[in-house]
Length: 337
Image 1 (tube, rainbow, N blue to C red):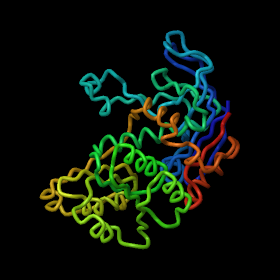
Image 2: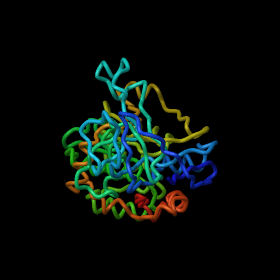
Image 3: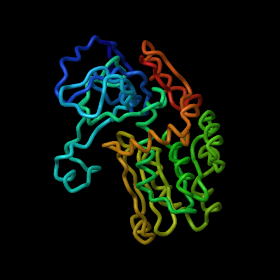
């Protein structure tokens, strides 16, 4: 079967890959749709020094299952987890699965492939969702993780940094959680994303290339914000700390490499304001039942998020487009099946 591999800078190969026989606890999934993530762009652009499978936001159909696999049948429509907690390490046995130290990344190959082999514990039924919508479940689990970690208070004041797909999902979920006001920050050129924000009910938008965000929030929210959720690079964290209120919580899920990964902030100010900065890695991904239900109910409407669709033979073009056309895109999707 066919599968894509990538190597920096932005090189791609379509290879014939042997799936091999299924183990007793494995399932074979025919991939139907796979989204292009910002991480895929980073892997293709700089991270992958050797040829690496690519793609992890996927949905498909079970075509074969191992002899001991319970609760699944051939033909079931499923989403495939990016990673799964092992269930047997010390942290898992303490009930702290989010800090699993022996994560199960068992999958062969990546999501931009015709077929993928995983342990049955890494799939979740998506019922009547269409496959493109199902492929949004993985980034939605990241948004859910961010929102849960932030503990958004009822009628709270919230800022979300970054209007990408996950930032947009977070902003909508913050409203669902009962936030009184939700601000979204980003650059003015992200026109398609601002249109989606408006349709999601996010009316307070801060263009950071047109106004200083700290000055804006000092005027708009002089007491500071209850919560700041950062889906932007690390360099934005010091601003998030400045605009948070006394006792505020900042959650962070972003990636940068090299010198730009390092930040500095006033430790005394952090201490005396009783702030909390919570890193949210979202590995393992949790919240799959909630993600599927939010998509099924259109609380998170898939049609708003999927802005461009490419065919399987155009995966390299899809990844490059996601990298270079951010003003035009929200989520780039690949129809595999």
